[in-house]
Image 1 (cartoon, rainbow, N blue to C red):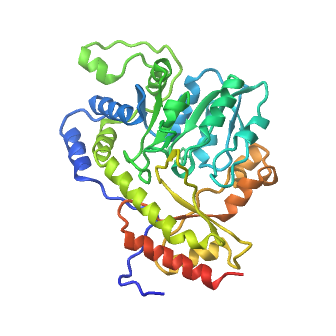
Image 2 (cartoon, rainbow, N blue to C red):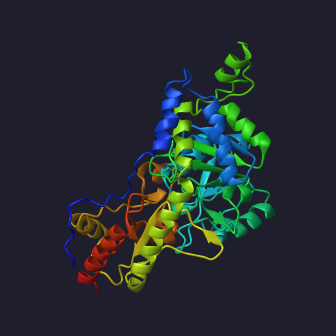
Image 3 (cartoon, helix red, strand yellow):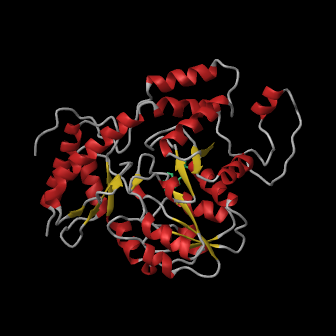
Length: 390
Ligand SMILES: Cc1ncc(COP(=O)(O)O)c(C=O)c1O
C-alpha cells in the first residue's frame, strides 16, 4: 500500500463557505434587518426555480419543515403515517409531533429506500400519508409510491432532506409528491447553517406552512414594518419556525455554486464506483439507474460479512488509523431505545433495514475532496478488506 505524503485526515464531511455567501451575509449584517425579510423571499424564489415548483416556504430546519408540511396537510389526530425505519430520527419525530401514529415499512436492500410493496401491506383505514425518504440522495420509487397513494387517496409527503439536486425520471421530488421537504444543515449539499424548506405545487399548503411557521400570525414583522401597520390576527395555532435573513443570505450565496458543486460530487462518486467495482464480492455499492439523477449527498456502501472476518466497528477503526473518517447512516429507528419502546418495534419485523443497519458505512464525500483523496480512500478500503477476507 502506498504511503500517503501528508498526515492529513480525510474527513467524512467538510466544507468551506464561498466568498459569495460571506458577501451576502455581510450585506444582511449591515442592512438593519436580520430576521425574516427580503433575503428569505429571494432564497425561496431561487429554490422554486431549482425545484421547478411555484411555491416554497423556507423555515428554520428540515425537521420543522417536515413537521409543518404534515400539519398543513390537515388534522392528523388518530391518523397513521407510513414511513421507513432506515432514516434519521427527525423523520419519525416530525410525524409524532404532528400528532400522527408512525407505522414503519421495510426497505429495499439495494436502494435503502422504503419498499412500495412493504408500504402497501401496512395501509389501513386510518392511513393518511406515506413519507418516503430519499436516502443519500437516491430518490425513492416515486412511480410505485404515486400509484399506491392515488389508489388509496393518501398524501405523498417526501422527506427529501438529502435530495437537493436529485431527479426521478427528469422530475424533482416536489414535482412528483404532494409536498417535499429539504434540509440545509451544514453537511447537506447546500447549507444555511440551520434551515429547511417546504416545496409544493400547492399554493394553499405552502401558505399554511408559512402561517404556522410564524405562530399563526396573519402577517410577519417585515410585512408590518413595510406597510406601516401594527395589527395582526392569529387565525391558527402555530409555531415559531421562521428562517432569518442571515441564514437565507448564506443559502443564496451557496446556491450560486450549486451546479458546480454537484458536478464535483458526481465526479467523486463516479470515481468511487469505478475504483470499487472489483470489490463487489465484499461490498455492495450504491445504486445507479438511467432514470435517476442522484444528488450524491452521501456515498453509502454495505459490507458483506459473509465474505469478511472483520466487524464494522473494526473496519471503521482501521480506516481511521489510515486517516480516513467513515460514518454510519443510519442506525434504524428500531435500534433507538426511545422509539423502540414508544412504537413497540422489533428489528425482526424489518429484516432488510435490520441487515442494512449493521452493514452500512458512509465514505467521505464533500466538495473539498480531490480525486487523489478518493483513490487513497479506495486503496485503504481495498487493503483492509484484502487482509480480512474469508
Ligand atoms: C432524512 C432526514 N430528514 C430530516 C432531517 C432533519 O433536517 P434538519 O437537521 O435540518 O432539521 C435530516 C437531517 O439530517 C435527515 O437526514
